[in-house]
Image (cartoon, rainbow, N blue to C red; front, side, top):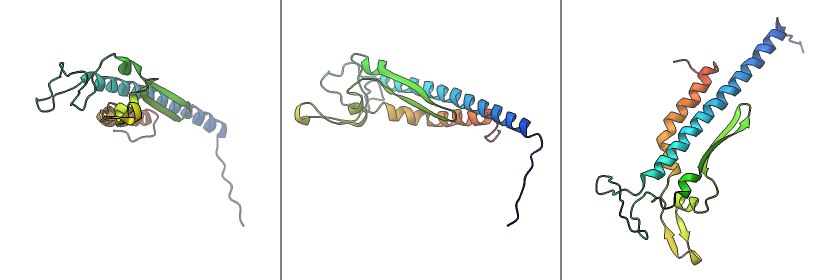
Length: 160
């Protein structure tokens, strides 16, 4: 079988440029991910701040909802613990970077997002009052734009 040989002139220069390009790409991706996580963190907090709304009354804020009853699809802020626990962080190295946004150390956070049974022997049915998923839906296009910006700055994505 014949052998194929490829010679790259100035191989050392090529390798240096590729290493530099990789460093710029990693830096851009991390910076854009931190930007995206910050925006999503703010949107989640904004979702929680909106509080109970009167769906039939044009979306006016319900200040006088009795503590035991919340007929709306929004959470009521009582202590501020959930909203204060929302944190974003970026982890990973290189081009494998992950951004996470969510509550930290608040035991009741998931039941409000997804709904379910609570109390003794699951005697209380709590309806879902999501705050993470609406924030993600609201920011989805912005997050995609941020990732695209990272790729464009690195010279990979389509230039517009």
